[in-house]
Amino acid sequence: MNPWPVIVANLRRRPGSAIAIILLIGLAVALGVAISAQERALRKGSAAAADAFDLVIGAPGSETQLVLTTVFLQPAALPLIPGDLLKTLAADPRVAAAAPVAFGDFHRGMPVIGTTVEMANRFGSLKLVEGRLFAAMDEVVAGADANVGPGYSFHPSHGAVGGEEHTHDGDTYTVVGRLARTGTPWDRALLVPVESVWETHALPDGHESDAEESDHIGAPWAAAALAGVPSIVVKPRSVADAYSLRNQYRRGGTMAVFPGEVLVSLYTLMGDARSVLSLIAIGTQALVVAAILLAVLLSIAQRSRQIAVLRALGASRAYVFLMIWLETTLLIAAGAALGLAGGWGGAEVIAAIFHARSGIALPVTIGSDEAVLALALLGIGGVLALLPGWVAYRQPVAAALRS
Amino acid sequence: MPGLSVLGNILLPAAFGGRVPTNLRQRALDMIRKVGLERPDQDADTLSRGEMQRAAVARAALFSPPILMADEPTASLDADRAAVVADLLFSVAEACAATLIVVTHAPALCARFDTVIAMDHGRIVA
Image (cartoon, rainbow over all chains, first blue to last red; front, side, top):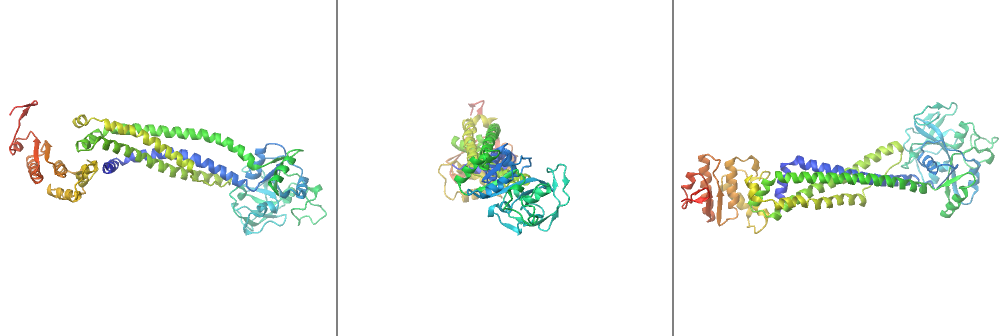
């Protein structure tokens, strides 16, 4: 038995309804696939963004806010911790590196972040694509996506993105280099020596004032002259050191968090939201499949004459059954495949928009979860398509021929 | 079957399964020429009624059946075309050595048969 000639003839005669069915199923599947792929991309992307931040120390408050602000550069006024902690940490044998991260200034929507050379090149793991790192108070190294290049000069302004800004007169920054891409919001930041941020705000700059002050940046610091910082990123020497540092700095006026751990609790929340969205997507798919089944059943009534003619020409009941079932399942399979591709494309588009807004690169992949989703729909659709097949199988030939 | 070509229509019963004679495609093409259709790839939708009847004859004769049955083969055809289809039925039946049984209201067609059974309201009257 070869039902293909009739199936092909049917599809050729009614391309419109076939395309409509494929598109409907495709959209329903794409919705589910996009939600699933997007959520995983968000986890991977945010986890990758937090990679370089082993341990973050800040003032007691919201752990989530500390991570969002330090890792994802989400603007927020964080309480400060005493700056002399920097010197203490630098001397601690458990610490491989410790760098302050100071916020507050913006230039053309790009955050100006005060930190050290060590943090700017991610403790040596990040390369420069142009120029060099900052070496003086008035020098800037730009992130990969900051739309200024070496040689560009500016005055930073204080305030939030899009908010009221006032320009700090007096200090002019000059971009001297550009960092490689990290796929994080840091790509859009302008990194400056933390001392210059302090100085802009008329704070002590962390060094003895009788030394040649404007030339020296970074460690060693002078404990007495260190201003407060909102956040310190610590690179511990080992995992054990990381835990002992966290335990120590959880007390006594500071808070120490592993960003990875904070993200996990955010993912739990996100997972709940995804469950709800997935249920909605599955409900949508069920509705679409039901609607299409109804349409196919109605089309059987329309095609009863054609089916009767086939039977009169010698086609068996089994042939008619196979033909209807195969045709319906074929449409569902095409829709599922389209949905898989469409969902991937949709997730990529969302990821691109998300990257443009947040700076976090989302690695969208289609994995087994999404394939299972599409295959499950195909399986259920294939089983449900038995129904119109059965109706066609049962149809009396003589009555249909007479009508 | 609309949506299929003339050739596709004639070959359709072969898709239903069962024993399929060899060289079926060539036989189908010969049959199309024999019934006087020109383009095997023409869509069945675009055939005239007379052409459809001829294609139906070709499809019926493809498997060389021992009995060839036709229900009103000349209905809705004018006299000339009806004669053409009737000629075709006879010649095809002869070629296949098949018994030809026809149900018809056409006196002209009846006249050509050896045996005629007249029916009225479901009863045999002659």
